[in-house]
Length: 489
Image 1: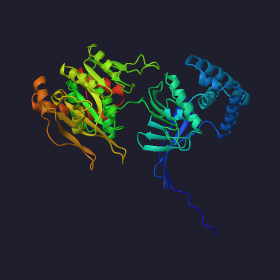
Image 2 (image 1 turned 60 degrees about the horizontal axis):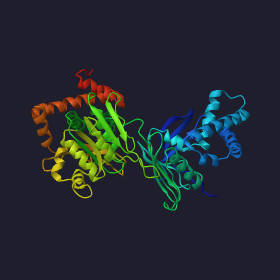
Image 3 (image 1 turned 90 degrees about the horizontal axis):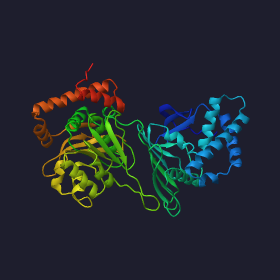
Image 4 (image 1 turned 180 degrees about the vertical axis):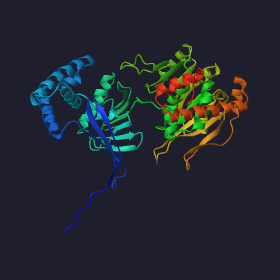
């Protein structure tokens, strides 16, 4: 008698639903005993298996009736016309197979088939999940991978059927924004209309297959309350940063890829008063500030295929100084010229906030003062704080690793740092340079400044307790604080 093979143990660790064009998709996060990573399983719940079989028959009938190469060759306006025509064709086929279906259900089935044939297929489901940060297609033989806000990297139950389909998706994305990806130009950086950043590569450059990497635009942006609730930063650290922001001190946010630099930059935007003009400059729009702010977002632009019409970050930086900004937000410092303009802006009284790739405060100073950026060290004195963000690759947790001030000689001095063992941010020394600067410009004593920090901790505690965490709610609450109208219940 043969021994029956035991099924691997599975554990449901999360479950929720999303709505994709009236198609209800159930998401399950399942940990399997025999697999090193959990699975992200997407299942359409309001379309039965029988209906899916009929829809597949409709899809095949539809494909035989239309010229799919027409889509490949079409321009934007033509594509809109083609989609309208195809919608009509699909609607007729659905009415043929489902004659008694109500209009709402027909519309839902039309959307399903349009996305399967003319859109990004099941990738559309992933794009609509607000819990996902990254979507990765490595090749047609592997499942699609995702990076989940709560659960880190997950393998999905979605596969792209052929390398040709992956290439087709990349071509579609590029065409929508005037980019192309071909055998001669096998690398593409682009962004979707939603603001999601896309990178695509073609074989044989990526030797295992064609790839697409989508970094999702945060429709539900991080705020200081969410940061505190998630343990990304502490109440005391947040209050200290708020004091610096309120008094218009410049801050640089550092960290590695995926550490939460842009999220922290977005959080800094929560502390801006509504009576100041803010200019933000990014390569691709990622920041979302409270709607009550006087905010002008600006984006760089790549040159067209003839090499004309490009607008670089340096162009926008120089231009922003002529726009009477009170605060300047910059997506990322990469070049010497950008860093020089930013430092000049700080020296001329502008408050500047930017991100830079560096793993700790000391490394920030090294990067800024050595080639290729090569800023004279004394110039760094106009920078008040360095915030270092870190993602623990073992646990997936994002945390504020260090808060450091910059002294008169341009060296960094760490004031707070993360105790990794306890997962808490601890004060390791008292601030000197920043507090001296605030004493000089505000006229407050050291005790009065410490009292300000204590009051800010209480306000932040109240915001956390009352779940004031959406970006506009946070903006309105802080506006009331600046106007002296905030009453803690």
